[in-house]
Image (cartoon, rainbow, N blue to C red; front, side, top):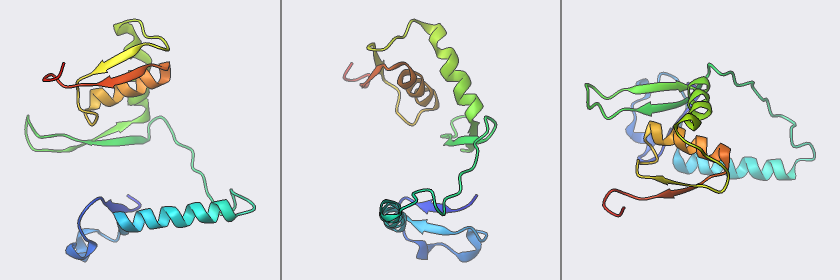
Length: 136
């Protein structure tokens, strides 16, 4: 882990030993850094100067999904790019999907299957529409 971003709360509430030497940024600090870096990039004559790009491999972690713990203790699940790409490439077997179609979704956007479906439909140029069981 390279750094931690707190989406809410204050850094002062963390004990130093809890972060194990990993830098911690508040949400406000992260927004400020983003603005400063964007301004520096815009003002730069060489937009790539000082930037290092790393190759992302298919076995690298793409996302962490935290489970609710319905079958035990809550836990973080690491999904690789390969895992998501496999789903994107194979969801089409469930039915035809082409640009201009509409996809009705009732799962929350943070649900793992919903996320894979979103990636799938975005790669096909499909419109996504959200609803709930109550409003269906």
